[in-house]
Length: 324
Image (cartoon, rainbow, N blue to C red; front, side):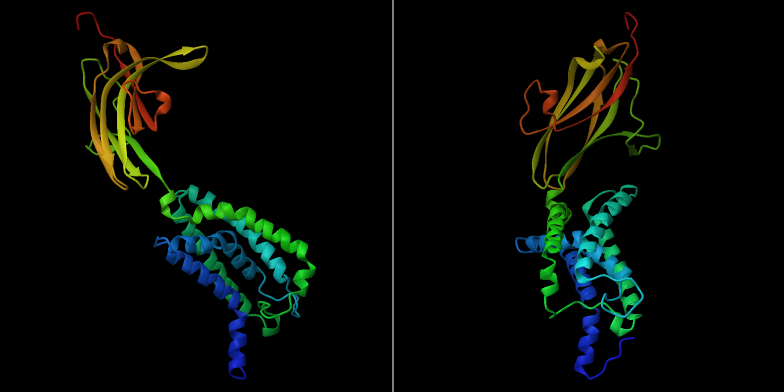
């Protein structure tokens, strides 16, 4: 327990004992709060606080949890100097962040900025709690305290190490800022195909696999605009026939069966029912029903290389008997 003596002096000592941990927790929680807001004034502050949140705070919280004692205290426990703590904090952060991302990759949340930020916040707060408990269990003379007001001669004498530490922080700062940028930079267009299953629900499965030229099958085309701006989309539906030439698969025949346009604002989505029948030339062959997505204007004969997104299914076309 921290015993307060001599009034204000005791309170000052108690606060100073946990000052570094309080600052870490304060920056972490402030950064988490700023995630809920955007704006001309908020965005620079999010980046300014977010970079240390990614490249320093998790590692520092783990460092003070592992080494609660002071290097100058009379303790048998291993400890670190302030400069060593700084270097180890950055190194641990660089080590922990990829592990968090790798872990999230195998979860339902996936590798997205919001789960990554929440995971790093959890690591920082949990390690800080452990650090508080371990530090307060030590005698006051053995606890690590920020060298506030102490001369900086020791740091100046080791200026080479300081330069190395600054360069290490700058080298990972760019990567860290990518994780703390606002959601406006997380842009994509969702383009998907769905089909009805036995219960009538739309699923990304159970696509039509065998369709005759005189039959009609149905799929559903899904579009979702997460680009942060209004876009004009054009969907071109065509059957493609392939042949292997010198070991490379190339398109030998293309038949456009439909084309439609739609405009979606930020966050809007659409679903279109698409009916199709294979062309006569596909009889007895396996062809690909391809959905090509373009943005902006599209020519009458659109290029496959200019597609913004594309998806497809394979369809077997039974051979037709003469006269059928």
